[in-house]
Length: 300
Ligand code: NDP
Image (tube, rainbow, N blue to C red; front, side, top):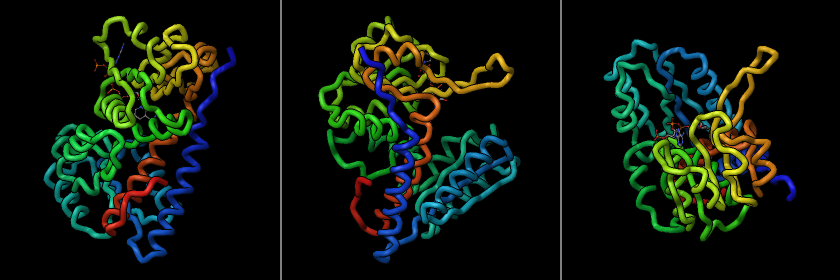
């Protein structure tokens, strides 16, 4: 059997960025609002600073406005909620992204609940979680959807076309990845099984999957002989492991070399799902701005 076809998430994400930039130019050209993304960072965690900076920079590259709010680590919950209220009320801002994790003295759920659901470009607000949980099969996604799961389904649709009737097994049930991926696959008419750390005989369930999405955070946990020949395998995991040269490298949750010999399609790590997350954030911000302008959802 030929090796799996690699799904090039980096290339797809670059194309998506270009389409979002074209969508922004089109919206502004028609007199619509310039989409605005606000990022909120509490504290000075170096990794979070890098993420926030790169998101703001990309927004500007795509023709959007970026508003960065950097708050000291000792910011109180009340002060942060006041900033969120200010951003909610600002018509120049269509998307609000609060960089997680927040310092321990702040209740993350309370902060996410305070974001206007229409500006919740991470798709974490309970209103948007509920919308996704109750969406009709095939219905338009006219509300913000979590970015990584959206990226996963975009890659699958690009690789396979229609997903209707496929057996999809999702490994991991987090609110960030596993659950929303499952909801999106159900919307696309897959038959979905959600698995987790208490699942019995996980390899046997995985072997039934036409589509296998793995998001557990465990280095090369899913082995080649768990994969149905020809299946599409999406590896969401990002694990940093040491190399023999004293450096480190990123690997996924799927044993890549083994999977490559069995799967039909496979995402690499890095360069698979990773680049889709930030591209989908930009996509969500554009869609939020279009909704404010009373324009319908467009697939870009
Ligand atoms: P969480 O730790 O929140 O959830 C992990 C899930 O995996 C849980 O549901 C857990 O089950 C399940 N799990 C853990 N061990 C096993 C096991 N042995 N067998 C079956 N299921 C198991 O992680 P996230 O969902 O936030 O992230 C998962 C991975 O995806 C991480 O590597 C993360 O870095 C990566 N990620 C990548 C992104 C990207 O942009 N590419 C974005 C977000 C995450 P249980 O519920 O029973 O504990």
